[in-house]
Image 1 (tube, rainbow, N blue to C red):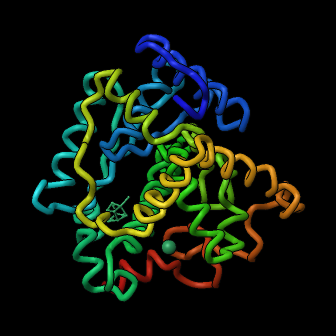
Image 2: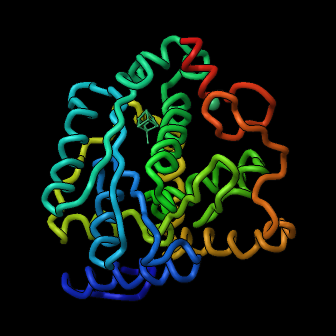
Length: 293
Ligand code: Q46
Ligand code: ZN
């Protein structure tokens, strides 16, 4: 691991990932051993590796998997659900499953065809539905925190995009921990300091069976383009991505000096249908989309 100036054997690498995760959880005050932690599981390497690490560390975890109804040539949702279920049953863990088609009447590709948000690509509709459904599951089932497997490469790609567009509100809310807000459960990213290749190495070395195929809609996405650009920078100078992210977290405290009070600047109103906050009085974007489609 050039960026850390470390060379570890399999045993010590697995141990290092667990130790570093615990450090991140404590450093960013993500949750404690008394909290009920819901892991957002996609069937991919990051979320299953995260669930495995949290389980080994003795946290009280369960998983939530959302079947998006995305098929493509490799039956993406069918295979990824099977792998998430297999991991849960092999480790004797509870996995909650939501199915977008059965709950809201349409799959992600179908929503995207009938909604202007998704006309060019379903990712925008998909992101909105996933965020809503994850939050809904976590609060209805009484979990204390929702955790996701976002790694450093994911975080840096989003950060890069937010800086390019000077998306100030998004920059304000980009953090390893987002506290609760009325209608929103706290969210945490314990893997935010791990490079993607480290989470992949963990999943392989820990013998986790994960979904290797990417979602068919991820091809040509901005996230992937950003990751390629940032990989070139990292290749020229090891540690660039980690420094970019950590220096951002430090600078944020100077830029947004009122951050301690609230991560949200705008006034928010509860949606009369789902109760989740929305910037304008009335139905939230999710409920408008689902009731109209
Ligand atoms: S699952 Fe959904 Fe991703 Fe597929 S449709 Fe796009 S957002 S790429 S993480
Ligand atoms: Zn709503």
